[in-house]
Length: 367
Image (cartoon, rainbow, N blue to C red; front, side):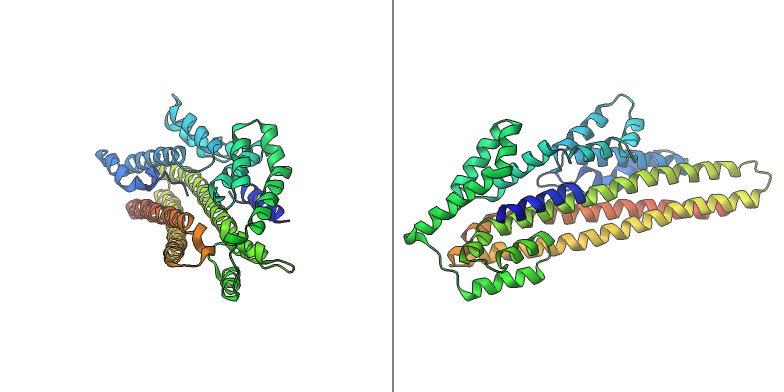
């Protein structure tokens, strides 16, 4: 049943979430779009400058995905778009609905991809000290065939997990007692942890019929697993949302630019200007909404970063053996969420720039 919880959660992330896009240790390249966009100011035509800024930022965004920690299918697909000889056209097609990004996301539903991701997550969250049999079996499956990974997901994980539990229970000398305070802490996480999957993992550890072994395993790997799933879900979610926003931005800018061009020599100048103003207003509203969304993501990532930093600190200071295995994963999660926070802030800056440019355009077409 414990394996069922994790497999179910991993599958849910792959199928139901769509996700920031961060390279290790740095904010995403596309998040620096406001600085990149400044180069486009060489044009004296504000519409051309805005289009160039948006196009360059879109390329930076796709490059950010290519060097991110998102699934390999998305990264490889992004690299292919970047290497295309069709330039900005290929980038726009990749971002557009039904384009390369969407196709790569569909591939994530493939069972072989999900099985590989599951094995990778096991290796990342199960230490050799706490779960030596599971860890070794997962590493072997990763080096093996698709059939090996499928077998590990179907039954190998549960079998290895059972052997690890039996070894821990037989090791009287190193057995860790679960105190009431330990259970109370897990209960608090089940209610209040900022990550949904951490809450689910904590609830599973305290389900009716659960034993001290379940609580021990939550501290040993369930907590880290939930945190990993929450981070994966966040990254897929924000990349899905941002890809859709970028595609819409391109369409809205094209429409507004055409409307502004139509003002020249229009038979009904007042009507043409009103239509152009409305078109640029649609761009500014879209950009303003995107900026607000990224500010919200920035806050959510900040909460997670603070949470995991606190956990890492508590783990390193605790003499309780239960906390021994969570310190390093918590520290790594804190760093990852801080990176997501920085990326979200920079993305909000890009959309603020687009908002201001579109508002300038609204004022310009009023005459």
